[in-house]
Amino acid sequence: KRLAVHTAGHPMPDASSVEAAETVLRLAEACGADDLLIALISGGGTALCTAFVEPIRLEEARETFDLLLRAGAEIHEMNTVRRHLSQVGGGRLARAAAPAEVQALVVSDVVGDDLSVIASGPTVPDPSTCAEARRVLVRYGLWTRVPVSVRAVLEDGERHPERDTSKPGDPAFRRVRTELLGNNRRALAAAAREAERRGYAVAVVADDVTGEAREVAPRQIAEARARAGPGPACLLWGGETTVTVRGQGRGGRNQEWALAAALALDGVSQPVVALSGGTDGRDGPTDAAGAWVSPQTVRRARARQMNPEAFLEDNDAYTFFQRLQQLLQPGPTHTNVMDLQVVLLGTAGPIRA
Image (cartoon, rainbow, N blue to C red; front, side):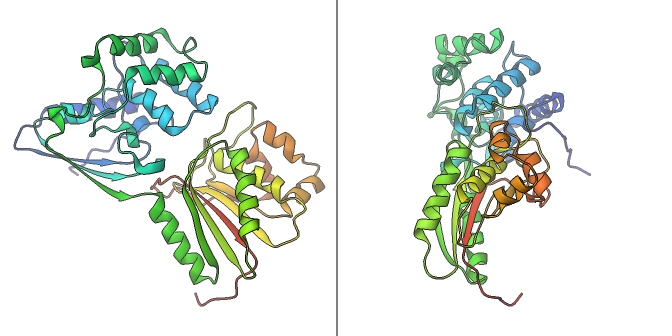
């Protein structure tokens, strides 16, 4: 009864996100030197709890974030821009709470577990600058396309560094402690234990996968096949790919990875099953976490008069796998530690349940 829950928008912030942020900031600003503020921080916090630097309006921030998503910006680039527009990110929550003691408990959803990137780093110093945020927008050809208010805030931060996010050395961080509770590496370790229990020889290849999903998938499939031994093998990767949206279809990075992997497996004779899934149970604006594929996937699609290449070009992997009943749909897990890619080669023997 003493917990107030604010339901808000994700992956795009909404009016409830702003209301949540304003509530949190009021609570933080009311803290004194004898108070302890506990902050539970995880992926999605940037959208779920955010208010924007004046004069940026919610719809203008949403437009900016949508442009970045569609341009294929990586998560660290997205958050470089986001935290410079936020009244919460970039250490501004810690600044609001000072001189109170702050204990931050963090679940990482970013490659490398950079605390300044997770939920835009509300309780840690921000090593980036408004100039870097501007360069991200320039890099993707968006500087002249984002709202005037966004450009104004970033230009103002360049001219007046004291208005920028909180930086290392700021006294607001003297009483802030941070503990990392979960990350992609721990998810990979759990997956490896389960695969070993099921009789597979396991290799955790990497936990820092990034890049365009349709380009990453064939490389991983080729590596898995090249590393395959005589017995059943399980190769695991973790990280977070991106998708440059050019089509009109539905999907997400994991489903797009799976469609590209299906094309890479077309015609392969050895037994292979591959999947990519988001650990939070949701991939893009869909109800699926990802999808699974085998060497038979493309053949099954063509038998149904479906052109896999056309679905890929239209970024319509969801429709493709929905028709084949190969979506991965575990439902929400309520924990986001990025994505897992699993490639199984050969057949493991039966085990005890």
